[in-house]
Image (tube, rainbow, N blue to C red; front, side, top):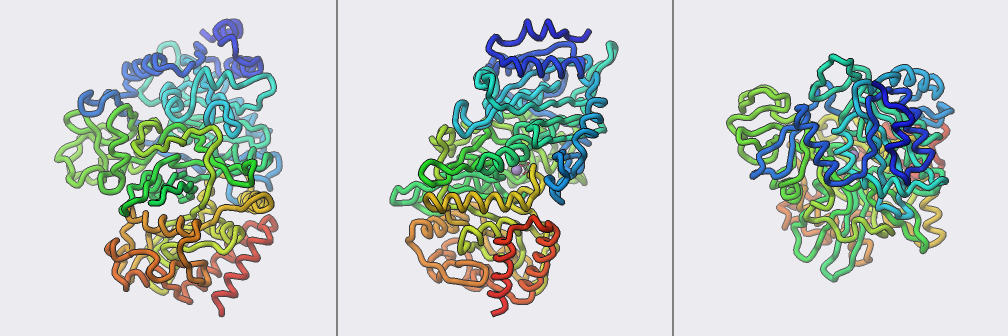
Length: 608
Ligand code: OXD
Ligand code: MN
């Protein structure tokens, strides 16, 4: 029983734009769902969807006393993460996708997807999910509509975005909007019983940057399926931003108030698995400094009317990695997760609560692991999947800033790039200029293996932490940063740029810096630099803290460790510069001359 166009037109909200309705009709004709449901984003709707999922076994209610109004989802074991190998950027010209994206011809991809989506929603309901990225009506916000046959994706999108009627009302006859089509790829015949986590072995996550369109097939997990997040707010937004003069950045956002009451805003990029959510919820170890959260993953950065760089967090929730989130690493998140959370692939305690590695110092003696099996501390596999997640509303975060959803955004004072580096990269360095900062962002890397002193571990480059998330040629993204910086400099002044590294190791292989709450000392130095309150010392890699400007001993760091945190060893640095040369060359002619210029200058400074 396939839904008819007449039924769709009958059920759609009166204010739905005709283009949206026509598109929904087209996708319904292709995918043949049993019904089409237009989401309004209300609490009652969310409750109904949750009840449906509980009845189907997709969600398990947790102990109401220990974890009120919270649920556990267990995905299929082969649908646990973003699949970069199945993620495509289908620009008309292959060169526009660049060497780091999977490219496919858009016409051929459309034909492939037409075949796959034909009848893909049979036996299921197609939900129409309108959403706003950014505060509804903000000049910095953009709207999209996702259709999906997964109620889990609907509820997750309801937490991660401003979802529902208000977003749909934003779409007037000439408003640009991003259509996103999603199916789990598991149609049901009339006699088929559904499963708790329907998905398909065949997966495609496809972006058409010129058409601003997303199609995703076969997965219900995270960034593969909650298309508002990585697919829209980073990949498609990087293409929109390039045309419109703003930047889609894989960055957290902080509001920081110093002891004198001056407010600063910071945007920081880190590759995945560098503790981004922990830094976004930093509890400072130093008195008088107040750190508040604006976002933990994505920032949209746009030049403002007075030559300042303004930022919004386009999301409305956190889809954070659970393992490693505990009272010592992120006490703010632990408090945030007390209620109203959907957990995915964490372990279940015997009293119906959740657990994951790193949540508590003691491991429970018995758990049900993320796949539903008995688990004890002797079990050979982790209790929670390493990529298990929590999905929670941003306004539940105890440190959320009062300005986090200001439609005008916040003015950015400092930009930070950080990777996980055992060698070479100092705890903190200030870029000499915007161009030098862009070079720091472009050459950002983490080290695969801990390296012995005097060598460099294999570098996994992740320029601007955007490697899996750019909808454009990566080197065009660098050029775009240069262009925006130039525009800021013409009208006002561009924010200062810094590089940080919490992960440098000493000769004995142990971390030199305690990290977490002590990272506030680095933030203090950065913002004192912005305020002009503290000196820096020149070095080949950038401006470093002068002796006495960071109280490292109060962080438990000895003078010998402190000097290792900033040591510049010529051999491994030369090896890294040679590696960078090859890395940049891989982007061919698209590498901006300013980036090559910065590379040559670094080379020359290191030779001196
Ligand atoms: C994420 C990521 O999931 O960056 O946020 O990988
Ligand atoms: Mn991320």
